Image (tube, rainbow, N blue to C red):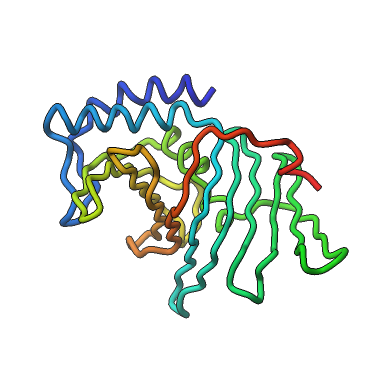
Length: 215
């Protein structure tokens, strides 16, 4: 389903490829090389079925920043597993979803297993698979190019569904050369960064056993 929608989205987005995301370091793709990179990024997203990532996740609020080191596994169909490896007081905490039930446990505490009744956007929006779904379903999307010291990145922006006061839009940076996601940021309605995911390792379309997502 998502692949079919994305193929349609590619055509629609190319018509609006010159729209900018905003920000002084961003510019719309204007030449053949940049548009080609955008098409390759689109193709990467269209073909993404699974991923494994080592990423830093920051939750930002007016009270400060909570930072977690994580190992993430996810499928485009909705299953995911996220393990927190730092800071020390929460290391070993694992949350899994088989797309039906969500479980949370800590490997350091025997028998500590919780069945979570519902998903929360604060958790689900840290996954690239959630961004892809939002991107495909957004009425308004934006594509730009960002020149950074580390290289040139294609920047995609999408609307986060729902009326969450602190999760309104999401922006994804993808390296044009490696086609690997570099950073995912979720903004509130005022454009303030609320969730920042920085990818240190990202592996696309890896084999993920069903057991990863269940207890």
